[in-house]
Image (cartoon, rainbow, N blue to C red; front, side, top):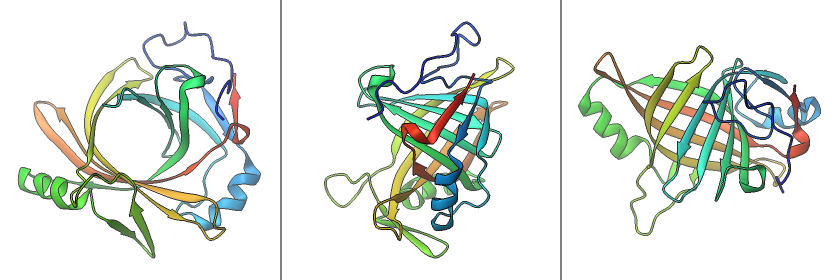
Length: 216
């Protein structure tokens, strides 16, 4: 479905940051305004922008051999592209736009372990008036979070790494066809030789090729 999305921008601009389907660090894209207007009333987000400027790019490798690319924007959002088996448009399996809902600081190691054990992965997750069902289920009763390390590229050339322990949830929207996805992630990075830890909650929805226009 996602084959041959868009032609790539000249890769000489930011050679270290990953690029795909015309998305690149410092670039921008637009979302279909009609799609947003129709779907937003059923989503957690409010006032989503149609125009997005990419301020950072994240890359995380999966144990399955796939890859996650995240294009962080100026609207407190990120466009996520999942690839499987390669790094071209032909290998894209999923595209979603995510918005950050809440970030909670984790103060010490005891809270961190409790978060990893009980907060991230649950059979269902309640957010305001909505209930989301866990997507990544393992064999047996316990489904541990999925661990990845994301390398983030900034516009000023700086890079950083964050260990993330994630679980994915979803709920069916009222139209019976579309879904809203919930991502719960316990995140840890080293800042000035200290552990910086937080619980990040984001909500997202699927995008199709016709929903995105890449700006040159």
